[in-house]
Length: 412
Image 1 (cartoon, rainbow, N blue to C red):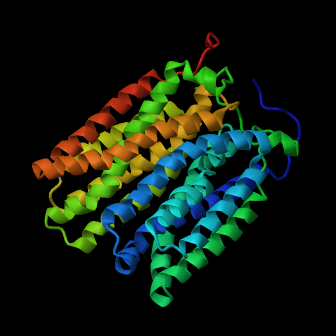
Image 2 (cartoon, rainbow, N blue to C red):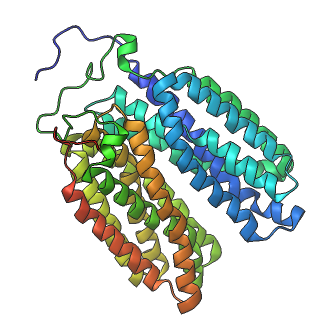
Image 3 (cartoon, one colour):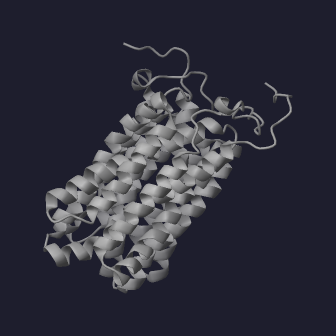
């Protein structure tokens, strides 16, 4: 195939899609990351246990994964502008309602349900970007994910500052108004398919020869009957199991080794910073060498980092782990959406990705719990980190079996 010889448009609307998606990602994940900042305020004012407060966050994560499936389907049917605007309304309203909580059921309903609905634009956003870009899909997905990393780094300190100036209820009002306005405004710039503007996802892209691209456009039902879907789901499970285990337990592990609390907390900052680097470097590299090979190397790097963690006992060794792990985490985060597009096509990209991510969410839920139980019974995280390292190792082996779906898919 050759690039279309027609005169290319001076401006490609796909870049507007990327900017709007970047802003939406920054809002949903930056605001979500502020939950921990309000933890102490809840403890002081209500006297709730840490288990009750933490449970609201876990409930939010599980319900979010489930709702993403429906959100993706609604976006395919009604278009992104309407669905994203509605989600923006839920997100902003949820945070406004958080300023009024007085009982645990309100915390679980407002944060665990209403805000989870607002956050469910996550998967549709990735699908829209995948539709607008072909050759540079990895790089553009990386830019969008940078919004997630930037929001996570900026919003919690800002929320903490606002709480110190005003109070936690007023801060939630501010967060709610900003989320509502920014999300709905950004949603107005989203369009579902390049063809709507008379442009093609290849207007600025030369086609990749020998690239891993599916010849099929599968539905979710068809994808269920393929080995590839369950491989992607397993990779999501291993990835999120390792990620949440490290994010929850790495700081307390470091303090247990005698590292100062402030220095130990910076481990998460290093992971977040290198995550952004990994998203953009790996995303751009994947456009040149392919998503499957890039995913393979990301799992290899994560496995090496986790085995290194077993021997890391000093300050610099833990920071080296954090940087390496963060880079690998960023690479995996940005590659899974383009990988689904490569294997199953774009027909049902959103719902297929959402279902795989929902299966992976169970890894996110049980990983920290298992690690905590291992420490409680053995007094050490070693076995927990070994399990993570083995999962990452299995992950890079499984990537070798990822191939585009062929035309012999059967639906029972």
